Length: 463
Image (cartoon, rainbow, N blue to C red):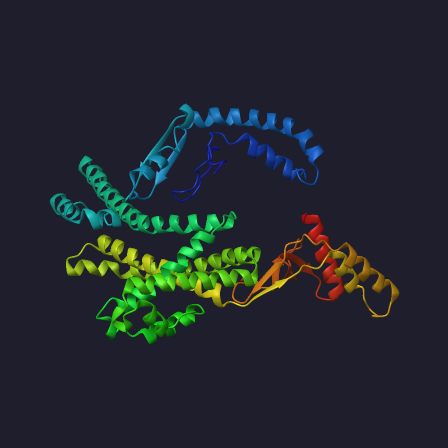
């Protein structure tokens, strides 16, 4: 496209071509200078010094050649743009017209189109038929009339208005999901930035237990409540420390003395005691790390599932118009219901994970110990034993422990094989492994000790 303004040049292109490129009459001197240097075998990458030295003389020579050809092209009328159809948007037509007559240069634009084009057939079909019948124009005679131009502009206006309504409608639907996205991303950002979320987790616990009790006691009298079923569900959530009979005795009136508010208050107190015991067992540092890991894992998984559900809802929500309902209002209402259900599910699953997941705390091994273990061939070898002793003495006690919990491990595959093009145009293949959060490119024939050494070197370079 840069050389489309040269004398006698014919360039066939789409309506998108030429954007960001100034079509200069007579040619582009910089492109011509670069092409001349390439013919001489000079490259700015392989031989930058000689290329830089030859650039200015070549550019001046190209400018003088372009100037003479520019005057010749201007005398012939400049750039001529020939378009074969009118587009749905007048903006694109104006951009095509703008290819000619740039920077004060002369030029011309001509559009050739058929009355059977989609633009005319879909939006001005009646006018086209009336025009052809009235004037009885043969098929091989071009039509030039102001009425046709006005009809084309009118059709373009209708298409632009229709496309604008489509974009506005898409924006309204996307705004529903965007508000939900802001809530989820704000929560993730708080966790990733290391904010203390203990109070939020305890609120999750209270809300979940209250939801269980409310669902079991909202209908009927206390004698009709299925408290055994409620206790079975609560035991799957956390280790319940009170029984139904104990609460009946504490209430002073038996089963009839129980109320929903009383059960909520007692069970909230019980679940908070159970979480205090859980925190004492794991330790405060491990518990805080477990809370962050659990919330991130559950939040990401539930959000992905919610996005799929919102896509399914969006695909079929247009059918609500057949029932004389506004699809957008229905999408907003049902989207809110799905989002509320997702948030409740996040709270419930987070509480279940925190109480029931098996946690292992692994103390990290120092690099000296890894080197000694990697070089250990004979357990009785003196150098290996000395290395282990030195590593034990120099182990950093302040290193944070690693938290291992089933279901909370990274989802990235530990081993990956890949293929990629090489410099000669062939295909190169390789393998990569993820060890301790570090991506290590390995040789298929390397031993385990060599792989560990490569991993340590990559880790040191990263630090």
